[in-house]
Image (cartoon, rainbow, N blue to C red; front, side):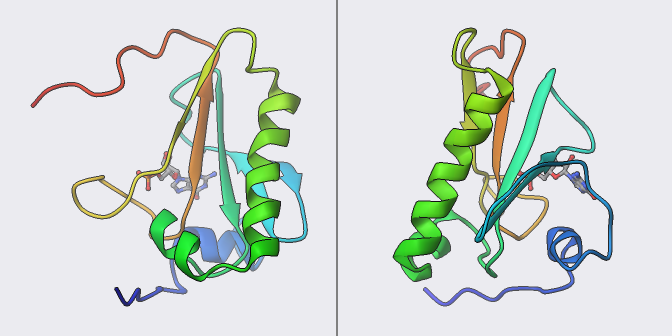
Length: 122
Ligand code: 5GP
């Protein structure tokens, strides 16, 4: 499936330094920063620096180095934020049904309170 990347999305602007962010971790291929509207005491977004719309796009087209860096970056943020003890959730929304607001791949790391069941019906 062809993916069309909009380089005017808000995370592309953050990556270009046009919009400030509360950085948690920077690596060669990834950036982690706090969500501007946190839904839990810990709410960090981890994004690849490359122009990928969503997770399946990344999994298909990213290099091994990017995938390794991104996966490790998510793990490092979990460690830095100390989420393992109390438990946490990773979410990667995609497209319309997934209600993806920003069309640049991001994984949400949520922790610090009971997060409820994964999905509500309806
Ligand atoms: P999505 O619904 O696409 O999975 O999540 C997008 C997330 O990006 C939302 O949780 C929203 O609060 C966050 N967000 C939107 N704009 C900004 C911004 O300018 N800065 C930061 N740090 N987060 C943002």
